[in-house]
Length: 157
Image 1 (spheres, rainbow, N blue to C red):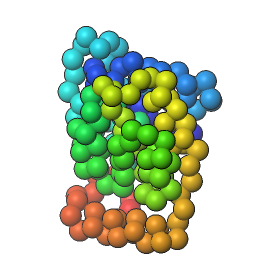
Image 2 (cartoon, rainbow, N blue to C red):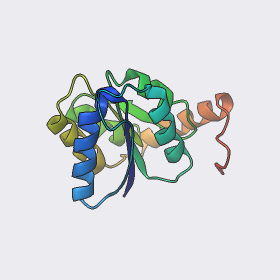
Image 3 (tube, rainbow, N blue to C red):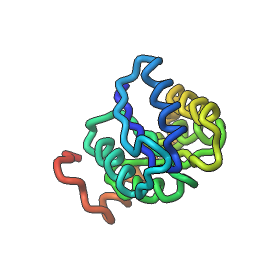
Image 4 (tube, helix red, strand yellow):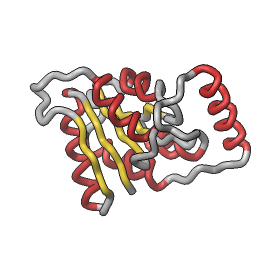
């Protein structure tokens, strides 16, 4: 699976742990963000890069990490076709996919330890979309999106 992982300075340790884990599992991983937590960056920058790549279908999934996860969630959900979910536990990670078909996972870097964040990514990647009534809800979201968001250039849907 092609996965992009991005963080600001507050998520460097988690980003590095997640990237290492994903690569060890054989995923093709792109990494975005500062090399050190002392190099302050603005979360919208990395969130926009990852979300745009998901939106255009250049990668399969994205993982974003900032201090609370809130800022990156807001940014990522501005992109056509992106369903970013901020999660803090395994239930949320699983149901982000099962019910919402989330293609971007957002983690709070100042709340989670790297080991638990890696666990959440594994749960999220292992989950499958339940479809059925949930597909109808996703279609409603897509309709709202089509009515209210500008489509990203190069996106065919």
